[in-house]
Amino acid sequence: MTFAIERGVWYQVSQGIRGIVVGDQNENPYVYLLLEPASHYYQVMTGYHLEPVFWGEQI
Image (cartoon, rainbow, N blue to C red):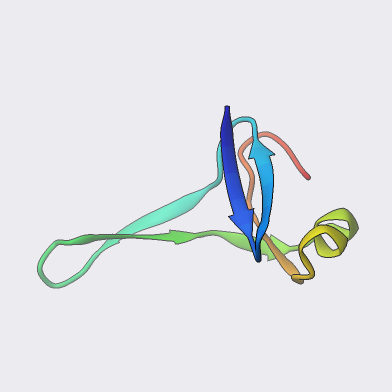
């Protein structure tokens, strides 16, 4: 079971969250989450207007 946290609210993630890995000038990897406009439920749950792009699911 995998969980994520947004603004102090924990929620279950079934399949994953999409992101992109970018290397800096020293080839150190950094991960950036891909975001999209939040569903009404996610906005009410977290108070945030964006949500991660979930892999194969929607909250």
